[in-house]
Length: 320
Image 1 (tube, helix red, strand yellow):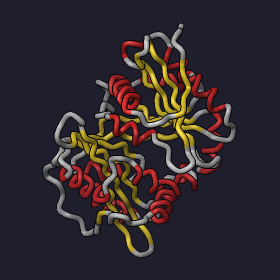
Image 2: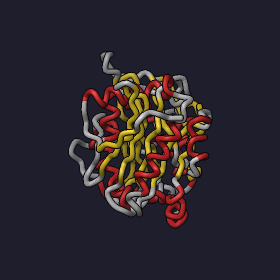
Image 3: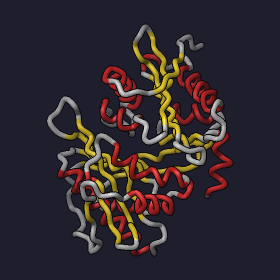
Image 4: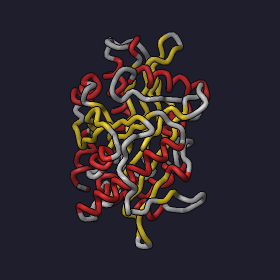
């Protein structure tokens, strides 16, 4: 039986809170295939609201120490999807049903704002305790992806591609071009989410223009890859390069799509290495991303599930 009080608060960046959230998140994923560097800067970038959106935190403390957390990222409009991050439970607090209690609390908060559907993920399939919580709560898998990692610099890369790839220019406004690409690649994300993608990418604290890699022509983008350097705050340089997305326009023919994907993947690992990162990681959702990543030395380490809450299922089926 869970005796800890679950507190619901609006998220505001705070050094102490962000550090506590980073500690709990890292402890929760440590030892699993999705283990990664989690810093206060990464927490702020993930949770800081953009535009008119908001973020609600669910927090559980034991004697003043944060032991579990979940975040609900509310969309700016009703037609867009919200996202649930977590619940993440510190190993010292597991086994008492706290994760289930937090998931139920999140469902109650979501129900108070009808019309907004939530998805959650990615959750590695090798972590059955994680996706088991969602199965028991009536959430259902709505999409899968694959977790890939690589050691940098990658050796034995294929020769440079004939597909031209360039970095974004400082101050370059790409909102509509990115929105068009995302809307075709991820039709389930909704028009509002696609429209906000460029803003979300560039307001992340880790964003740098030379980490946004683009290919296309005057008619639009045929692909994009986004690389964030993730720094260990106690070390002099980035420990990881996070490929936040690798997108290939699905309207391209198979051979062209493969060439675009490989060119973007190669440019992404070169960017990560130039940032000084030791490893790179990404979750591939785009159909062409997996083969492209494998072609430049990435190794698939797990499959992940994205879950939709019950009220999200009808929305998802309606858009794809």
